[in-house]
Image 1: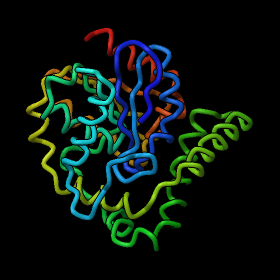
Image 2: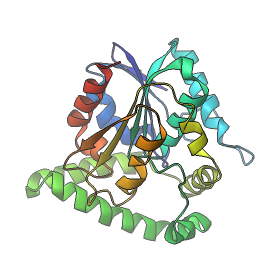
Image 3: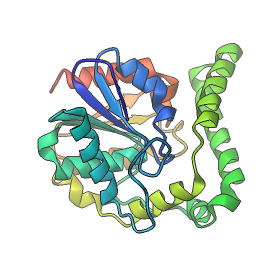
Image 4: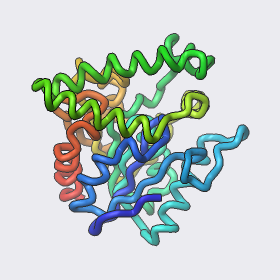
Length: 257
């Protein structure tokens, strides 16, 4: 578990790859104003909670309970990135007394299902991992170029991102199991139970090549009183490629709570 900074407690939940290290730029930027608490998902290195073969989606809720208990905080701003937004949504629905504000960033829609290509990756995670990696590089490159048109800054951003991924590698089998768990959930029912003020954040429609912005924006119709913020000039990776601007979005929202 990571616990840095001072101020209002803010819990960050990582994406489907499971490693908090991938969010390190966002953690550092947010820690200038908040007490940032985060942890890798169950089963990842450094996390004491196992991700056994019989685990269900409620394991993520149990982990968040443990994180908040160990931190000694009673309520937090809860921010989920991509797949982490599904965990944050479920937690806000079931632990309303512990969530003062909810932020969903580029989160798959409440009726998300694996596409045919994703299902192929999830069925054969080790065999298909090279193709998955190549696809991720192609999608990420377009977004990096949009944010950093100058060759030097673009190269620097790629090297930094690549280093984080290399030093905290994602495990294809765990990604596959998380995807299958999410696919079996009814997140629309959770939306109706959310009482915390909610901010929905997406990148530009043509830059997010992972989660269509329309999917994320569907939460605006399902979560009462939720609001929307466009993360300009980014797609799915804005939280790590433009962390200062992401922190500014969070700051504006938190001042309304």
